[in-house]
Length: 126
Length: 126
DNA sequence: TATCTGTTATACTAAACTTATCACAGAAAA
DNA sequence: TTTTCTGTGATAAGTTTAGTATAACAGATA
Image (tube, rainbow over all chains, first blue to last red; front, side, top):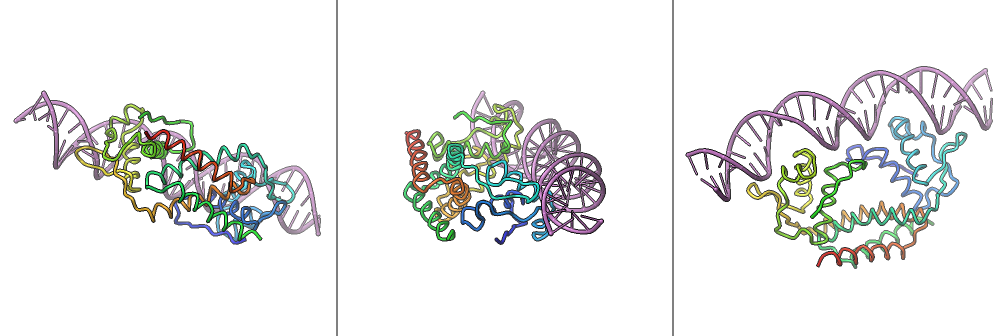
């Protein structure tokens, strides 16, 4: 999977890394049990420091997307705590929806966006 | 409207301020044309520095939620650029949905969350 | 043995966040 | 007119975070 970092973005590099990898998992470009590049290797290909990659991997571990094996590095391993995930999703959606509502975006339009995105993820995960 | 800041949060104070005010607009606790407290007044009631409030107000202005009048301070004034708002909402939703999909949350569950949140906002905006 | 892995520690720069003052111009009210 | 409120600007300083740069260590593997 190709990971692209926008060095002009406001978003921190480690955060972009996390999101890209999560996106990769959602679209099955990374699959359960698959191993991510080593921290040094990924750091070199992107052109950043090893510790920045390590920080991203640690956060992914903490958030239940990977497990870190001393021998093989970071392995995709989803912790399916759905109650927790639903709670977090609701909190994040609350912020996005508040902004949308202020701008006059209706409930149907949001549902439509959700469907577009889900369709897109499912299309890319085959 | 009561604005509460969590000083132990990872989220920056100015960012929490923005989100709370946007939430207030979404639930009609702040209405179009209404004026927000002055930067000094709000800073004092919260117990933070004036410039932190000013930063929040400036961002709200930039994002099209308020206009800043030299005489009256920050006034709720939504800039209804719906195309822009839809684009931004889609980008933010993409990140949230990717996480949800990884955790096995289905499309229907997301739709349900959206409805819950919309119901909640509409109930609080009367 | 040589090489790969993650881990840890330290040091440093740069940027972001926040606070702290001081001062100014414009508007409004006493 | 004077006082007091508004936002704005400049400047300084403290704290935290992000990122880089090295170095070293232990465990696994070839």
